[in-house]
Image (cartoon, rainbow, N blue to C red; front, side, top):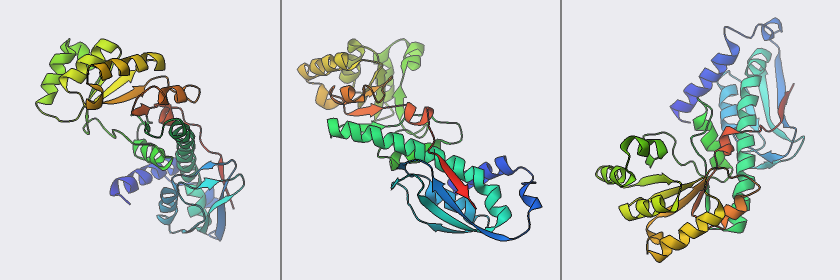
Length: 274
């Protein structure tokens, strides 16, 4: 496990426990056994991190269900044994992370399957709309669910957005400047003319932001007529959800990015039972 992940997990525990779990300290040092149980069906994610949290407090863990597996209601996920204080002081941190990651994986899996069934050549991507401090885990949950991480941070890839263009006042000038230093360039556009400009100037990915499927199809046709379509990847983004994702998958794009995969999370209902 990455050192970064371990540091984050320790910080999560420290945030919740503070100077000590004063309620659990009242209990005897009796050893106990507990189960983590699902209260609804979904796709499981975050098991190895739940295990790491318990193991870091000298607990023993037996994993019954692994990341990516479908779980049913009232199904056991893992069995933990150890000191009562150790298990109970970790309970909420473990459940919070496991619930959030599983919720993300479940939602991602549903949308990824819808996309692939509609058009097997289109990939689902997450965005940077993650909870501060949780991006590492949010993005991994997306991957477990069948999506792609895309950019983890601003230093990983050039992405020219509307505010960057507003500063320079020229999309063409900004792309030309960027090409002097980077080979992979993604450009966010909101209309046909900017999409053509981005393709001509050498963008490798063009994000079609908040453009409905009907207009995307027109952009695709124009780029094809100009001989530019095969030179770029097209990404649809903005306002995409379960009700319209199939239409976007049919629109001719290569990628669909959905911020709500990680920004609007409905956690999977899980519980720990002694």
